[in-house]
Structures are given as structure tokens and as C-alpha cells.
Image (tube, rainbow, N blue to C red; front, top):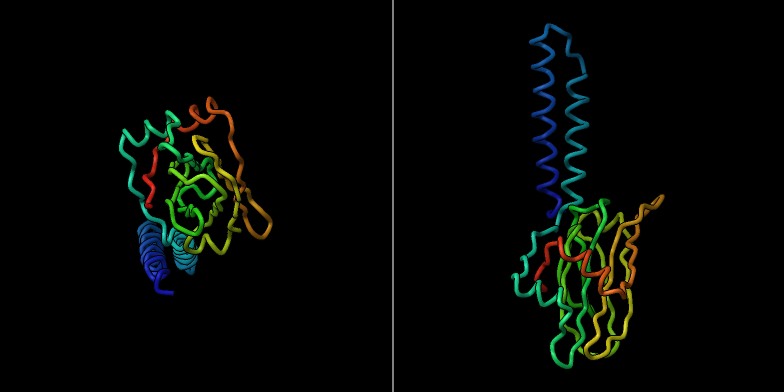
Length: 194
């Protein structure tokens, strides 16, 4: 509950301000106010609190240095390692932070469109993606297993798919370096946290 408190307070403030502004505008125009300003304030407040609760837990993320981004765009893994690239595209839920975890360790949190790149040891790994805040309750997390070979570039594209009751994260493996390079170049790279 405490992580949603700022969202609730923001919603209440938005409700009071929008309701008060609507009442002021109607009364200065000589119209009867009735319950209309309260309805408008209530709608704006609930909508604002809902959006803010969806964004609870989302953080900015530290942008990678130009050198880190260029190394990722050159697809150069460290010697004896593989390079894992995860990027997020799409409009749905773009401001909500999607946590990217590798073998249950947080790698980065991505908004859309953003990407991250990390060196991984050869072998089998488990990549999981899921949201934080109220968005976590509305979206199914996903887990993708993969095997990395030394010198290999493993890339995954994450997008959101709307569902009737729950949204889902769709993950697609991208094997073409040309396609990958074109998609990643305009994006901001988020530095990995590990």
C-alpha cells in the first residue's frame, strides 16, 4: 500500500484541483454547478491515481556511455563471453518500467523504446521480463530460456500484447544483425545494473 500512497495523494490533488476549477469556470459563466464539478474531479482523480499507480516502481535507469552503446552496436562480446541484447518496442505501456532479469538477477529496467546489453557466460540461461507497480498485476510476466555460445550475439525483442483480462509480454528472438542494428541505433541504451 505504501508504494501506491503517492499515486493516491496525486489523484486526490488532481480531483480537488480539477473539480474546483470546473466549479469556478461554471459559476463565473453564470451556470449552475450541481454535481458536475464533483463528477469531473472524481473522474480526473481516479484516472490520475490509476496511471500513477501503474508507474509505481518505474525508475529512470542510467543511460549507457557512448562507448558502451557503440560496443553493443558493433556486436562485440567480451572474449570468451556471449552478448545478450534485450530491447523493448511498442506504444502499449511504454512509460511503465519492464524489469529484465537474467538468471533471477536484475539486469535493467526498460521503458519503450530502450535496450540494454550485457556479457553473459556461455551456457544455458533464463531471461525473465515483468512489470512493477500496478502494471505487474495487469501483465503476465514471461520467461525465456536460451543457450549462449562464446562470441554469439543473442537478441530478444519485447513488446506488449493486449489481452481480454491480462496483457502479455511477447518475446521474439532476432537473429539478423542488420535488422537489429537498424532497430537499436535510434534507441537509448540503458546501462546494465550487474
